[in-house]
Amino acid sequence: MAGTKKQKMEIAKVIVEAVYSKNPPGRFLKKCSETGQLKELSRRDAADKAAQAMAYLIKGESLKVKRRLRRFNLPPPSRSATG
Image (cartoon, rainbow, N blue to C red; front, side):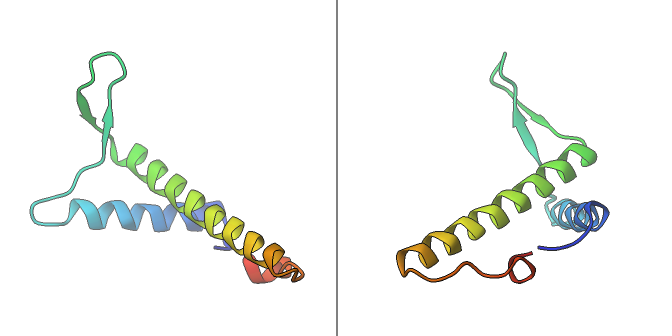
């Protein structure tokens, strides 16, 4: 996923708004390490987590592609093709 950090955060904010706009509304939760209770994240923190999840997803897909190419002894894709 190519784009600026600002563009990626805008996508993350759209994801957060989509979750909150459901009926009943969805929530982003984090488990407290001290009490074990769930705490609702702020919209800002939820957007950060959504952006982080997108980055992990993209990086994971990139690693899968590289492993497949290595297995079949193919050259890696150009940098512009993978973003």
